[in-house]
Length: 122
Image (tube, rainbow, N blue to C red; front, side):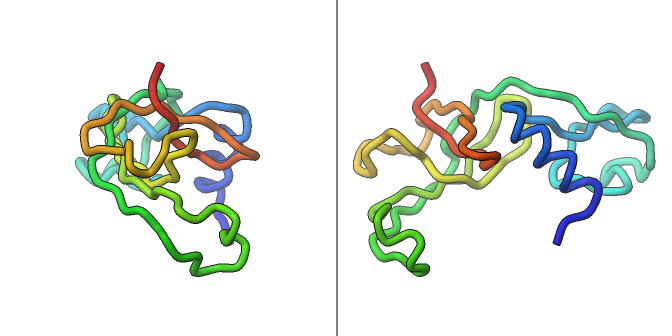
């Protein structure tokens, strides 16, 4: 189930953009999206597209598929990526061998059918 805030994020991702809420009162860039700013409690915000770059903050390599839909993707990497803009997102790291992923590695968001994933930064 999604709400209007999720739908906006997903629509932006489907268009190849990473967009987050920017508080209209204090300027805090927030994720996850919410009705109120967690810093100042203002309900004022606007969606803002940000650059796609970031760094791997943490990651795990999945050697076992916990869902049959992922059996052909094992092994795969799921990472917590700290975007240069500030928010942290969780997503798969694609196009990089699992043994080559390291903490601090530069990555950039890539979009696959509306899903936000990360590949090696150019």
